Image (cartoon, rainbow, N blue to C red; front, side, top):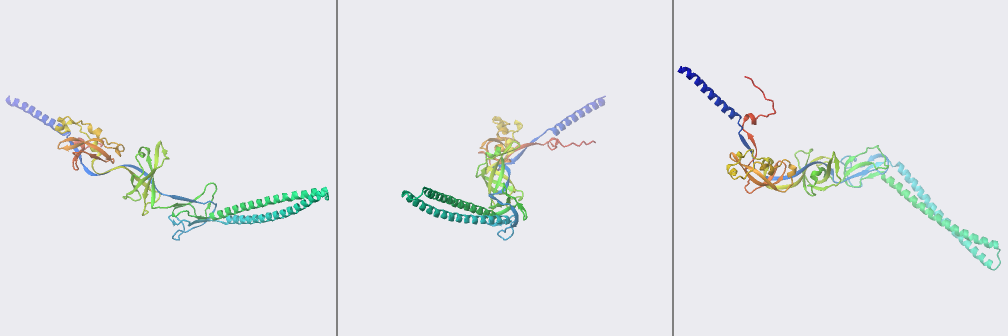
Length: 444
């Protein structure tokens, strides 16, 4: 009987112990122990920037066209004696191309002949004027004699009237001859203008460079006919100086207010990986453009190109430096966003003083939008310093942010201190597994 009673009691005791052990194991396996992720406060430089893309352009470009129509016969030569082509270096006044001049040479010959003819017309008109003046003198003398004879009653009335009429006709003929001279001289002026125009058109057949520079575009070939009517055809594009370039950057209207002339700029080009160039803001153009309801302004960035490594029309990835701080304490932006998830994580002495609000870090260190922080004035924030198993808050002044790190200042903050940026769970079942990864079910 005793053996029978001992056996159930032992079995019940074993069941109770097994249940307690299982409960302890289940709670121990599923209880999440949190640990802090930290970062070290560093000292360095930080800059608030605006990123945009643009195109490398020559600082000054001259578009050379043709003012007459005709066939391109030949190209000129550059300073090295080679035929004009892409990249040719030319001097001011250098011959770029020649247009067939046969038609314009004929026009010049016609204009020259017309001018000579009009010159002869002037001589003829002057000679005729002299003749009319001589006839006027003769008619005047006869008219005076007729007046004397008429006073003496020795001249018939008909002869008197005839002498008077001849005098009036001679005087009118002189006036007509003078007008003819003036007309002939005007025709000569017109002929000279026609000659000058024909000569100018003939000169236009030789296309010369108005500036010293580099040919960056040749838009015609030998044998091609250019037609100059209402629009002047473009033949060559010349960059005056490739050692000074500009970048035309499209900047969003939300950022253009923070860009000022003279501000430093850094940029890179895909053609030169790993190399960074520098420049400065020249001006902001006022003629904005709108694309899909987005207003963009063109900002001119001036940059030096002494080795001429930058080629026209390269794409540049530009960063406008709106604010820069050197040799300051830097913390990750996540450190300003984080705050304790439970009051138990806060140092006991800070909890006893009732000085801490676990949600303070969210409002003070909100750096979720880097654009809101870049280039702004200092504002208050909160960092959480790690102290063993706990954290304690530290009020700081938040300065410039580059989107990843932020400059902070505080009396009790030094380089090398650890600040909390987040927390992780020590539970391998919950912390290390990705909930979106399909789970593999293993069967025994």
